[in-house]
Length: 211
Image 1 (cartoon, rainbow, N blue to C red):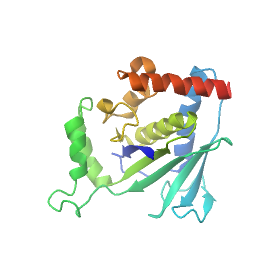
Image 2: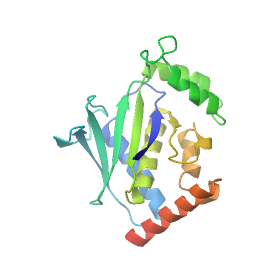
Image 3: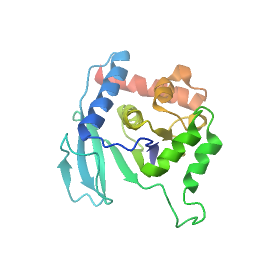
């Protein structure tokens, strides 16, 4: 079982692994500083889905990979990590008359992005989605890493953050990076009790293990 936060880029730009890792790490350490935990380092490796190889990512290389591969993000030497996959959005197989059908839910659920329609027109040009995946059972620090990577990708690409599997309060999605950072893992900005307690438990575990 796993939970996935989707990032739908709006700007059609090229990003490097260094840009993604550096901004994610900056956000991670900002979060950790607020709760009294020292800085940590994020690393990224390229893996194939059959787990037959694991290669270090050239920091200056384009943030891009093959269909059968994914990026594995880790923190220091902590056991576990976050997977990032990518895929096209346009899908003519399920509904040839509406190949952008998967964007319909964003329109229906949107309560906060005032220019969503204009953004989605640009999304169709980029035609990419990044899937930031966290497997269940991992340490609480990986809730934070999943959020930091998601926020960094969305910030760099002016992208839309979306979730359908309960990674956090679903009523808050779709959203943008600036809003996401204000409520993700923030018990005071969380309405549902389950997620308030989850935020508190995550921070408690991180402080106990790494302070």
